[in-house]
Image (cartoon, rainbow, N blue to C red; front, side, top):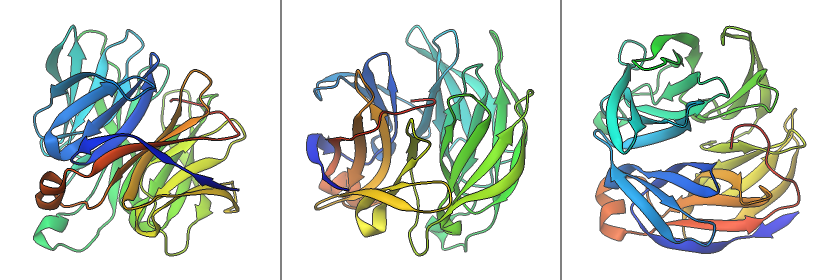
Length: 286
C-alpha cells in the first residue's frame, strides 16, 4: 500500500531519534543540540539542551531519561530536570555515538557512526555497546556486538528476545537473539535492502519493520526475509527516522530534513515531523 504523509510541525534543524513515551513524541534535534517533546497534535511542550548534540533516547524503568551525546560519546541521565553523566562509550565508539534503544529492564544498546565522515574517512566496521542499568549511579558498559557497518536505528521486540538494527552502510537489517543477561548472539540478516541506506526504524505488531530510506525519500515497511508491502513517499525532504505512536500506536511519525550537514540544516531550518495513519499498530519499545 502507498501512503501519503502530511507535515505535523516544522522549523527544526535536523530532527532524529523519535520515541513515543507517556503520550508524547520525543525527539532529538541533532544540530540544534536540543531534545524536544511535543504532543500528538504537534504542540511543542518542552525542550532542553544536551552537551555534544543529542541522538538516541530511552527510559529507565524508574522513569529517568537516557540521552546519547554524539560528540562526547557518552550517555547522560536526566532526572528531575537535571542531566548527569551516566556512561562513557568512548572505549567502544571510535566516532560519534548515535542511535539507541533501552529495553524494559533498563539495558541500553547504543551504536555509533564508526568513522569520521566529516574528515573524509572511509567507512569501517564498528560496535554496539551494551550499558547495564545503574540503580543510582553510572551504567556498566560492555561490548554487545561488533563488525557492524554503521549501526543506526535499533529496536527490541515486544517479548524482549530479539534486537534488530539497521546497518546503514551494510544496506541491510540485522537481527540478534538477546539472552537473559542482555548479550547478543545468533546474528542473522533480517532483510537485504539493495541500494537503500536504512536509517531509523520501528517495529509493528505483525513483526514488520518500518525503515526510513532518506536517499529514496521514502519510508518502507519490510518483512522478515526482505519483502516490502507498504511505503510512504516524503515530499521535499529526506526521512531519517520514524516511530509508531499515538494513543493506539497507529500513527507513524517521521523525522525529515532537506539536508544532513549542519551548515545547511541550520541555515535552511527545514527539519520537520511528518505523520500518517497506518493499518498496523506499533509493538516493542516505542
